[in-house]
Length: 245
Ligand SMILES: [Zn+2]
Image 1 (cartoon, rainbow, N blue to C red):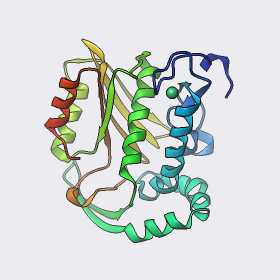
Image 2 (spheres, rainbow, N blue to C red):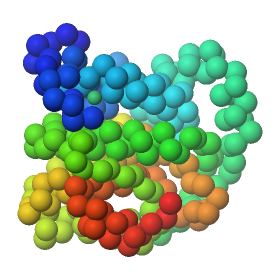
Image 3 (cartoon, rainbow, N blue to C red):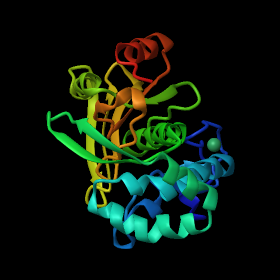
């Protein structure tokens, strides 16, 4: 906080020039166990974007770890979920009402079962978009906002294969594949060589959280895919290919 390095710069999230006041942790520190919070990516952010993002992060910290498959999820449940839910009875009722058993066939064609975590999926998708904007700047100094749109999706198995192909494909400029906090948050991203504002990402929290809506039962929904572009045509093309809502 307050580091000069992040002051009076373009806000990575809204693109407003000279508006940044702080370094925002692209993936909030609270997602990670206390001993794994060093050297997390930070980017310049304005007050409004920082507050909006914190609001979404605090909601997700109260629910997301419950469905996590990673051992870090257990730490997050103790550190984040329990105290947050203790203060929010309405959210506890919503979670209890929405939990259900699932069986999924994942991308390795193995079945597994567990509990679906009821979640405001829109908030998870919104955060994934913000994280993609932050990571594009962190790794490559690519400023996406305000020209480039971002959209996040979860995919059925076929979509997952397609998107992974796009990330590793021949059009990719530079790729990054990173695991933070021993896998608490993982991402794989690339930008397009001919237009760096076209970026594409796969990311997962806590080893992948099963949140599948009913229409995706039987399919893996553990990662989120994000696409950004300043060219609407490309954006709708890639979305249309595998749009699973
Ligand atoms: Zn901003």
